[in-house]
Length: 97
Image (tube, rainbow, N blue to C red):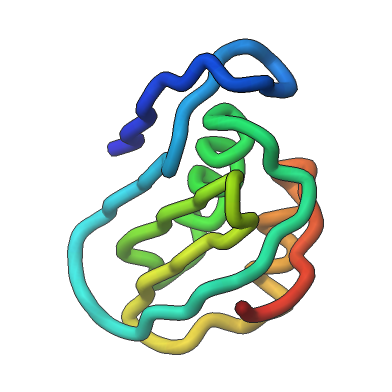
């Protein structure tokens, strides 16, 4: 499930939102990453969708304004896998926040 809240601030594509969240259900380890290049809700959704496809991920919340992506997973994720997912979405994983 993706949740987007519309915002009329400047964006890269015009279909803007704030704090796109993908919730796949469950609890576990929560890790926050810094991602560069996100500017709007569309960006948040793209990053959230790619990371949520990783095995074990139960929830993702991306916030373009802060550049932070919070991921909840059943076990700690391999940072290389997260980096690849962020790259697939068209952004850059800077590291952990």
